[in-house]
Image (cartoon, rainbow, N blue to C red; front, side):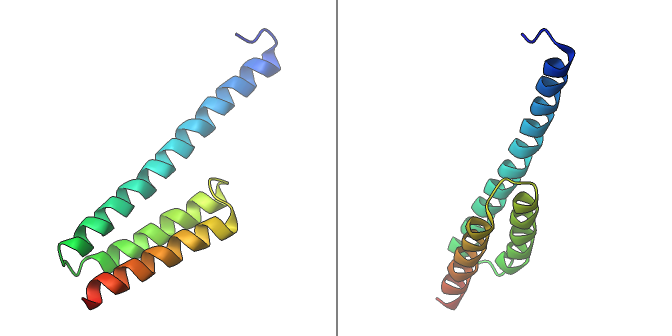
Length: 88
C-alpha cells in the first residue's frame, strides 16, 4: 500500500481509469458479438449496430484504449464483415 499522499491519489485515479477502460472495452466486445450474431442470423439490424460500434471504438481511441490505426482497422474490418454477410 502507498504511504505518501501523492501515491495514494495516483492509486485512486489509476483504479478509476482502469474501471473506465474496462467498461469501454467491454462495450466494444459486446457490440462486436451482437453484430456478428445478427449477421450470421441474416438480420438487417447489423447496420445500425455498426455505427454504434464505430462510435464506441472512436471513444476508445480518444481515451487511449487504442492507437489510431488499430481503431481504424477494427472499424474497417467490421464494415467489411457486415457487407460480406449481408450480400450473401
